Length: 358
Picture 1 (tube, rainbow, N blue to C red):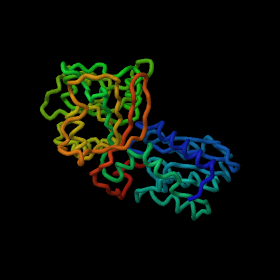
Picture 2 (cartoon, helix red, strand yellow):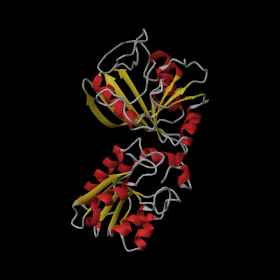
Picture 3 (cartoon, rainbow, N blue to C red):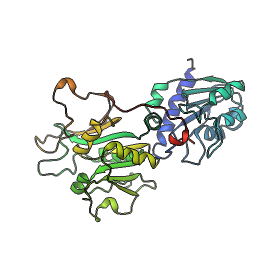
Picture 4 (cartoon, one colour):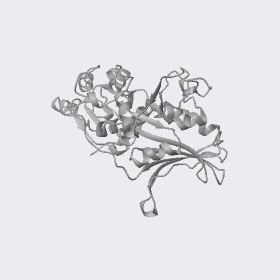
């Protein structure tokens, strides 16, 4: 695989564009695209619109206009070759007269596949697999999990003290972390299609689970609020039922069953904000794809733990995670991690309708 410095820079920007629309495109993938003129100058960029709107390539081409002719399109996902709610992106690239297309992730579904072959047949040079791992671990991760496993991607968010407590011995938990960390949680919620808690958290904290902007006002787009409540304990007065956003109260028997319900609703990225018991259930079933841990420089010595019983009795069987990012949030620290042990079934869907394509 060969890509110029300008193309690699454009691919990094395309990944940023894809990440900027996370939470707005499902069930379609969050794709980013950059168009370079023939001399390598960026002349257009775009990201996937909400379902029914233009794809990233089309938006980038519209911005580039005639400057796209003879240039290069850099895209995080192989341009589609089929007609869904929008036309084939491969055809749009051909019509614009691009000479080269650089792709991070080859199309994994049969229905939307064939874009690279169509472009090559028309004389366009196509490079596949450029910075593929970074793209797969970025904004495309949630959609790819849906394609491969038929379930949403799960981000587990938890805030705790240095000694791993999410609440004090008296049950108080507001606020473990400071305002910068709380603002980061709202940004994280905005990047997801649904926010999940258990009935225990709903009863203990009565969270609203909405996304608020920097000015404290509710954002225009709100993720689905989900409460797992098998025993019907959620009171009608709970803030999660206040009408500020849509809410699903589920009686699913297991985390996997709950994710199946959400996948059927076109949810592709879930934020798990439940307490230690629900977090442990997801972790035991191998259904956490990423963890975002906010640590406050505090010690409690007692109180609710970060996570419940995982059924692990020896250090040799510990669930280990790889740190992928460290950020200071005011006086707190955000650690992003990916579990090293994954037990989900990986499978490739044979059509875009089941996996959230265009």
